[in-house]
Length: 182
Length: 217
Image 1 (cartoon, rainbow over the protein chains, first blue to last red):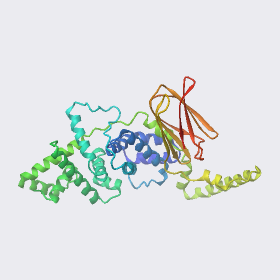
Image 2: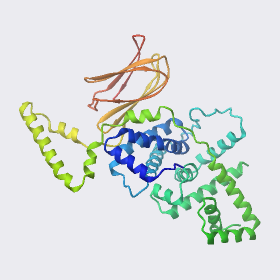
Image 3: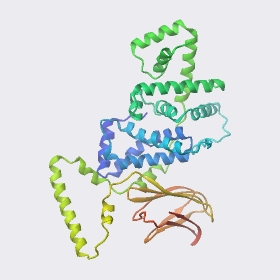
Image 4: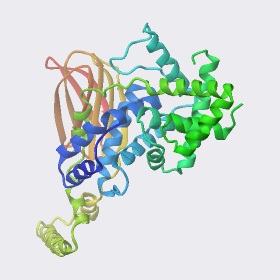
């Protein structure tokens, strides 16, 4: 979770709109990690995640004047990141296997720690559910958003968000139980 | 077996979204049904593991890449946030600028294509991929991605092998050199470059000689 006040984001947005690139740089610094990790968890490809994160920030910059301050800034930026990631997933060919590529600095397939193996199993399971269900899991468990913020980010009713999250967890639980991983 | 309403209580508990009445209801269900308790424990374990998924830092050059790829200043959009009184001055300024542009256009005697001016005043657009090329011939390897941001072009180079190289980027009358690239990703804005139908040619140089080429349409 990124713990910042909306006022701070709003001030940086205003300065960015008026051409202050350093202010926009501060917004990038503030949100680059959650945006990159959300894309990484949705795509499981470090290179694509980096491209999605970069495109997200460029789109944000291009459309700063369209930002509605009655919404949380991070909901807006996360929505762009999620949509960009879903677009990339939509362009993947159906037969394309998940690369399983690890991000820079991450251990390779020879990792030995049990914790790492468990995480790999969890992430494998996550990739086996639909992108729409995966998105709510990422928003909840990676970005630590509340139901209300998830609904705002996805432009969905809170009831729908909860339904998707519960369904996703049930599926993940079934998958991991079959593998004896839970 | 737990029903959907009972499971919803467990999910809400895990997410910290239970109110007092729901908490009491959940406690009653847990006391009454050992199987439901097991289900709840399993869901809590699952969510604990999901919460512990590793987060990584973005690549170190990420911020620089984003800032380098930003299109020209967005200051004109600030006009839309002016107080009402400011519009009068904005209108006057716009009138002066348009009149000045017309005078310059008339006095230079060239006539010209109306779309040229329309192009320079056109609003910015979302980034669009223009072309992607693999660099596999010669002493360097990797890929090049040309993207349009607003009216400008941005080049992303991802080199996976080869000694440090200089890259000469040229299209029409525009050219620039990116010096000292080694393996890794570099994002560079191409000021003055436009999508004019002409290719953007990349020439990779090392030690004063050409070691590879790529062309992006």
